[in-house]
Length: 419
Figure 1 (cartoon, rainbow, N blue to C red):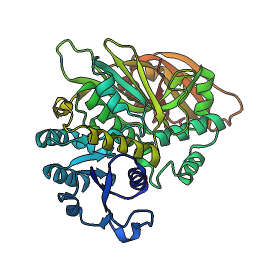
Figure 2: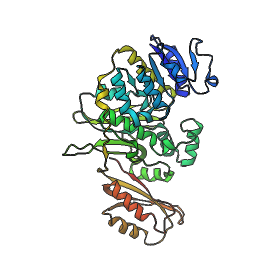
Figure 3: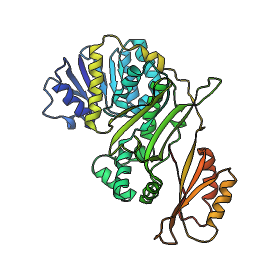
């Protein structure tokens, strides 16, 4: 199989090395990249063509194109052109699959070409293949887990070392775990794209990424880990999508990406550093977990090459493309109820708890406990209120009412407490 590589950054270079070192009958024919002259390296054989022109990859001497440039455009145009030219495609582009995956799968099915995107979710963990093949006999109800290695690295550092958010972010950027602009990771957009891909593959629902609520980890402080530990929990960025129980069969799901309290000793709490975890729950089987390294060039390149090798071994594309290409968007509705953790920082004075209790009662929310560690200054006093189980939208409305009260130093932070 002749393989052309579109993109020669960290992942692209790792993919090229794996192809060149592979004992399988694979030939790297082209490397396409902007400013390609700056990308040339002496370890690539002289037989490989270097180009800035994507059309060079559409000739008869290329069987498969690996896309690792990322983003929606021009990647989407390149994918469509490749499929139209009857080239199989392998990609690590989670945003493209999340936004346009249904259309691309339909086109691949119509053209009879392969379309692999194992590397788009959870790095080197073969979770897409496991769901489509290993769990094909079950009907999945829920997919959840930890899908962003950058956030998990930062949160576990804050948990273990009690260092500030800004300090751990700077460390993650220095070590290459976080980008110079970490917005997609910290605010949940990266994990949300992966969750949308998993929802399509595992639950057969099309989620528009913009419909899935995302909540950032930016407001978290080291004091949140202190209070979480006192409650028997720690904090992780958790992604979750599940079918709502509808008697009328409506396409309704509960989906979110947000930091949450998870019980110490639980499988979520044991995910450390840049690792990822995907959990599935089926109607027939019990919960199944997939765990491993979720970030970095090498794990992603392994997933890319695994797709390439699978395509090389199978002359016909899998028949499930059409099954998951339905683009009718599911309705996202928050229906599950959870206890909630609310951390406040206040200028201490009498009547604060009473004011909070009155506001919460107006939204039918009950206080379960109040926690306050000693030794903090009275002009910036952190304390925690835990709430009895409730829907998140009701809690958010109460927080919006509470936030303007004059004793707050900063906006309250609210996290679900997961069982």
